[in-house]
Every structure is written in structure tokens, then in C-alpha cells.
Length: 181
Image (cartoon, rainbow, N blue to C red; front, side, top):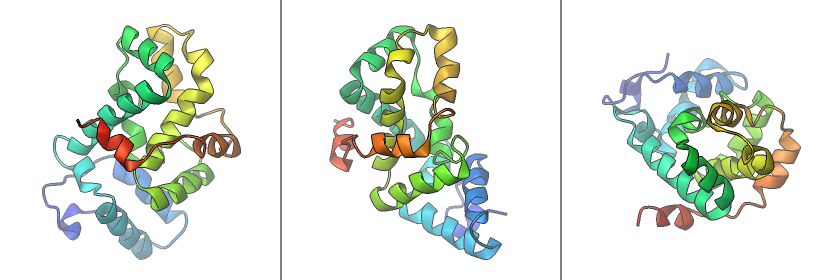
């Protein structure tokens, strides 16, 4: 099993999202390799801030996602705000599992390739690409339809179509840092 003690972060408890990340790793390597890859993921991308009590990194990601939507998909952002739909209602799994719970395994690997190269900006590019792809439909939905639609908007998407859209989304680390100011 995955134990935060081994990663030097005893303040981190078990979080369900870790299983999804571990499962993707286990699809491609043996248990020991998967464990050490998880440790590297954990350290390199500061996942302990996502998994520690209070989940501070997750809340920061919610703010960054709202900022990215406001700047990159403003009509959708305005519609979500008007209906009171906050990222906590649909994006928790995206950031806690690095999309492993939402995308098909082969799609997760493509997204993770980008994540390993670009870091967290990749996760925001994927999210914004999904919103842009579904923008006309999302703008037509009310609250009761919108939340389930947001949780499922990845389901009918081909990975090729998604990646074509992801590479067109211009988000940098400094862009995400702007939301903190």
C-alpha cells in the first residue's frame, strides 16, 4: 500500500485519489517500480500539499481554475458564477487523481506525458480545453443539468481531439501565479 510515512510526510493521511494514481502506474510497471514512481510524482509535483489535511493545494487549484476560466472561457465562467457552480462541485477528482478517475487509461497516459513535461499547467490546459470544447452546450444548461454535465464532459471526447485542443490553450506557470495576486 501507499504510506505517506515512506515519503517523509507523516502529516499526510490516506486519500482516495492516491489509489487512482497508483492504479495507472500499476498498469505499466510492477509494484515496486510503481511505488517509487509514485514517490517521485509525489515529491516533484508537491502532491503532499494536495493530500495533507485541509488539502491546501487543491483549494489553490480551484482558485487557479476559476482564474483560468475567467480569462480563457469568460462566457462559461460567467454562466458558472451566475448559477453558483464552483470547482469544488466538479473538479476535485481532476486534481486529486490527475484525471486518472475521469479519463480512459490510454488518455490518462497522454495527459500525464504533458503533466510530466509541464507540471500543473498541463492539468489546467486539459480543463480549459474541455470547457472550450463543450462551451455552446454548457451555456444552455441550468444548475441541475450543469453539474452532472461538467463531471461527464470528458466521456465522449477522443484523446486525439482533446490533445489537439490542449496544445492550443496558452497557460503558463506565471499565468497561474497571477491569480494569487
